[in-house]
Image (tube, rainbow, N blue to C red; front, side):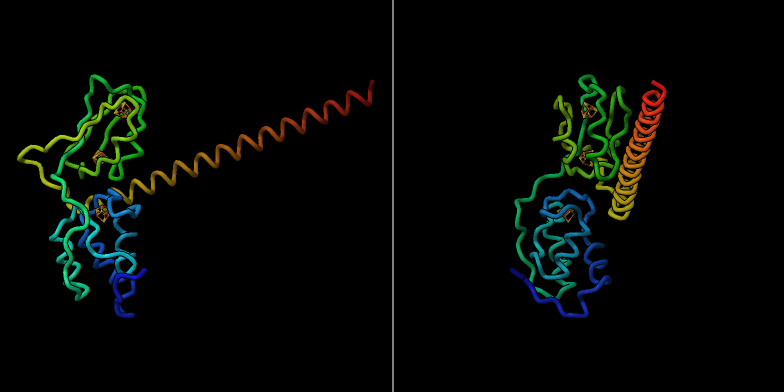
Length: 201
Ligand code: SF4
Ligand code: SF4
Ligand code: SF4
């Protein structure tokens, strides 16, 4: 079902860029898309209404409506007050599972070491909560000095996060291929040895 009929000339990269530039870049997935950019693409294609970005609130809806020359809509989800992640460090077991869960790499730590949130980089997306096996991450109201990270910075951090994940995946595939090649070579050498033994027996 299409919710809007954007003009053909608007269905291009420039439009997607323009919509994406209005989004807060928390990459929180609350719009039911895996990140801000796919939501911007869907809005540009008229596949989803313009009112699904809950962190952006009415302000972002109004800006998208203005850009697309559409009437603004009320926010689809109830707006939640912003909270930021906090790790109860005394309970952290250093499993590192929260590191890949954070789309903007706002968690600092290494396996078997205590982890902590870099509050000024946290966008409050709460995607790290579900990753923690001991529930030591909680969302708390930020201090009065805290401000939402600059969207351009959050976008850049997300792109680095994706790149790093891809590097890890490639390394895993590379290591697995190398292990398989090694196992095949060993099996071949064993088979050759066995064949030689059988001949001399
Ligand atoms: S910030 Fe808005 S557009 Fe981006 S992922 Fe969250 S809900 Fe979707
Ligand atoms: S620390 Fe948690 S809440 Fe903050 S940006 Fe990362 S995943 Fe989102
Ligand atoms: S997932 Fe939880 S326990 Fe594991 S490192 Fe992160 S905060 Fe610590």
